[in-house]
Image (cartoon, rainbow, N blue to C red; front, side, top):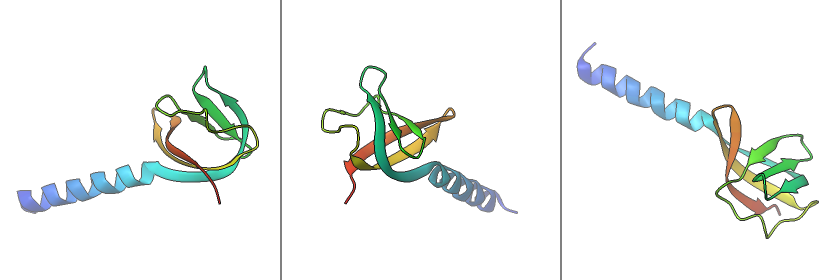
Length: 83
């Protein structure tokens, strides 16, 4: 296989592995801790929210969480009220 072919395969593999880590979860907020920068959904999943403002949300809100798994933790990149 040529170098170009090897590089193309490597890039494709990296793109697929990155995409596999991004996901979406829907559920109702069970607990919300602004001090710890975490929310827990009724599904039992805990999300780190360090870069997000949680003031717009309250326990019981049904939300849609976009997240990535980093170092074994689910890190939310976006949270919005689910419709």
